[in-house]
Image (cartoon, rainbow, N blue to C red):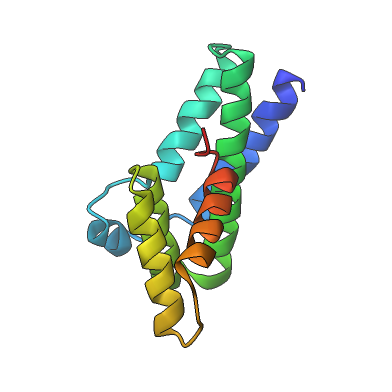
Length: 137
């Protein structure tokens, strides 16, 4: 893929992040000044622009961009308050290397909402989510 094409797509992602950036109040509740997505997208843009990446790093950048895009589209659809609930907790657990915590959180959420969820079902779901997030290595 050409560098210009990648940069253009990352610019689209940056625009989406800016459109869906939490309000100042929401950021304060998150103990942040800027969202991690916005910071990551800007860093990836500069990395591509300055050509400081290997082929494997480029693939990782593209996976991360896809994950942020999907997440921000969901935020755009339902808003930060709703998004920050279960999905955010699971994502934070996985990004922090706490897979068992993510499985327990997902399973409890399903059971609390009246849906049966075995430990195996929860693990399968979290395993698939890890792959989608690019954390499966």
